[in-house]
Image 1 (cartoon, helix red, strand yellow):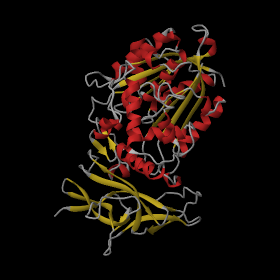
Image 2 (cartoon, chains in turn yellow, green; image 1 turned 30 degrees about the vertical axis):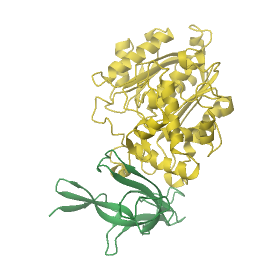
Image 3 (spheres, each protein chain N blue to C red; image 1 turned 180 degrees about the vertical axis):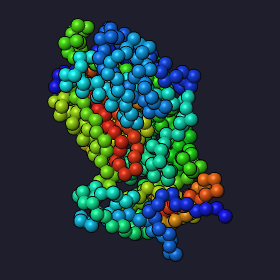
Image 4 (tube, rainbow over the protein chains, first blue to last red; image 1 turned 90 degrees about the horizontal axis):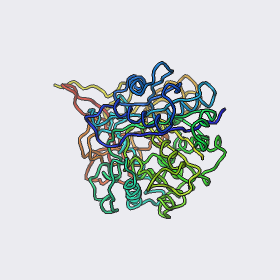
Length: 380
Length: 130
């Protein structure tokens, strides 16, 4: 298995752009990543693009406008973990010696489609028919967090306040606005106890990363950021999940990535993770081993996960504030960690970050604990 | 007269005393599944027998939705109910004078109309507080 460098990163502005096509957003991100890499478009040999809504031939449609054709192209879907799946696809091809350079793209245009605002599980899914929506699921999990982990409504709001504060420092963020705990708790109720400001918004956007072998990287940079761990896993049967708030497959995906990387959670300097709903960020700390099971609330309250703390989580603003273009997010978190490790994260820079973790989750399917979890660990 | 159509065949059985959910049980290891499994996910055995699940369970978690789901207008309640067969069922809930809901409440199955599609009534299941 060869080392893989993250040579270039790019993303579009995140926000509501009902008039912009997904292709246009994808082109913006892909062109930015190629430019950032400094590589010639025709030196790229493989492409993976992820999109969920209205997907179809997205690699081809986007890349032809960036000067890339005639290579292996794969279009993937894995709900909100689609972007992680794209990155992993390119990573795998380079790591195992099939290609030397490639691009992973994730793109989503939600506001232009009737899907907007719905956040439903896959069609024909029994539980979706019976009233299960994403916010409903996370609300039911939040209720168990309150029953079993001592989590309070203020803790949930705190996650939102933190990530919106971070978002103010990110020029690409959909929302650059500070909120107080009261404002978060008093915002419109979505699924009790989750309020509007505890939910990620509907976001259109795209992100892209250019990956390559170390030989290729050395032609362009003396200090490449590397992917040292990659893992993608789908959920086990829900009947095996005793506690709704404990995600065995999330923790196991992290273990696989840490083992490949040869590091532990205590070594991680910065994290970007799936915070589609504020209460779940607390559980993700536990999945990633940043603290023990059941102690995520203490970690949050300690301030460790805000900028300036021991292990800042979602300094980008996260899905809550930067936004969540579904298939783009898995790529965006990798791009963001790469920027952090390069020291190019501007006002949201985590000082001296050398090791970062990019996590994304996706998909709700009846009978399963979860759809997919993708994790990449990067080092400088 | 509206035609009554079950949400899905084989998911539940209506009867005089309120009906039951239908799962299946592995004839080798005894694990019970709802909805029914095609093969035993626990041991891989291919023969499973239909079983009627208990009508009463414990509310494991719930929420009140204030935005529309596919078929239900807000506010609507949904939750997970744990049945004695070690099966956790997701279902819409019936709001009664016994609510607000609380984790740990005893809940009973109700087979009833869930929504309408054209001139059809879609029949399914909810749980209501005892």
